[in-house]
Image (cartoon, rainbow, N blue to C red; front, side, top):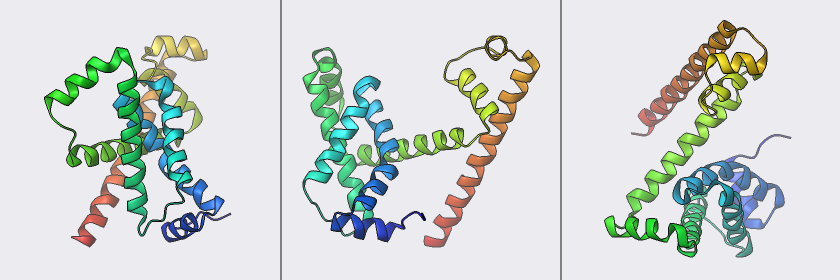
Length: 192
């Protein structure tokens, strides 16, 4: 089945079609998850907070003129849900109060968080697109912070193989992200 275009997603969502709702969920779930983790510092409840965000979106039978309005609604709702979550947490109350005292959360902060979250989601998608052997070594080195020796021992491969796979993964990620950057700059030049 062919993926829906932005216009099809928007029209279908406004009509309450399940396929369009699923497309909205797929499109924004990972980005919202990253934003939620960043705002709350709480990975364990981030998934629940994102699901709460989508529940608010779905329960109101809202209509949007643009997909960007829907996205902004999701991020504002998600942001408010995160703030409410932080308020309820005694241990993080002090962190929230200090954040509020430093300076208010502005619209610029809001869009910077969206940009940050979308960029992180894009990087994670590039990591997931790596060949399985490269991805596994990269994740062990980068996320688990294991050494080449530890990776080699865990996977029962030579240390040089672990090193080469990590280097190949980094090279592939760098190339993929460079292509995305070039394409983005090309698109910006078309519209500016």
